[in-house]
Image (cartoon, rainbow, N blue to C red; front, top):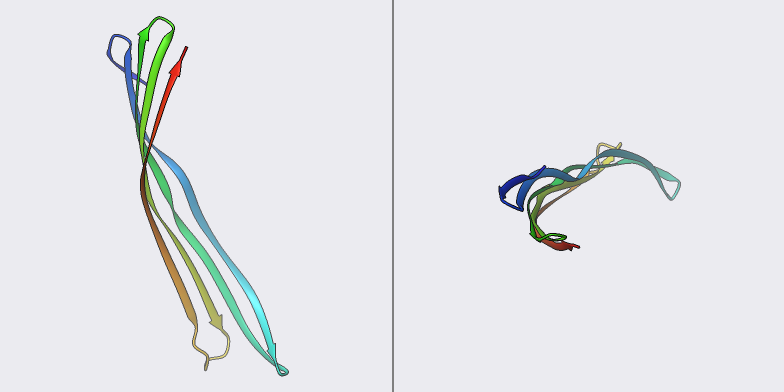
Length: 113
């Protein structure tokens, strides 16, 4: 939805979800070494997402010709986690966690005839 600021000039803006990540998966694994079975689970999970905030401006310069521009910022955090959980109490479990933080800018320009 646009808001007129001057005759033939309109601005708009907003906040939108850009991407979303949310999952949990467990992989049951058996590793056989010299007739010994090692049982463990690998748990994968991810969460977070990116958002987009934007501002638009459009102007009709003369009848039948318009220009427009959009400036956006994409930002957010995405987390991934992987755990190896062993059923034997004498083996240490392992966990890897990764966090990705993003902030970037985009610009778009266009015309309409």
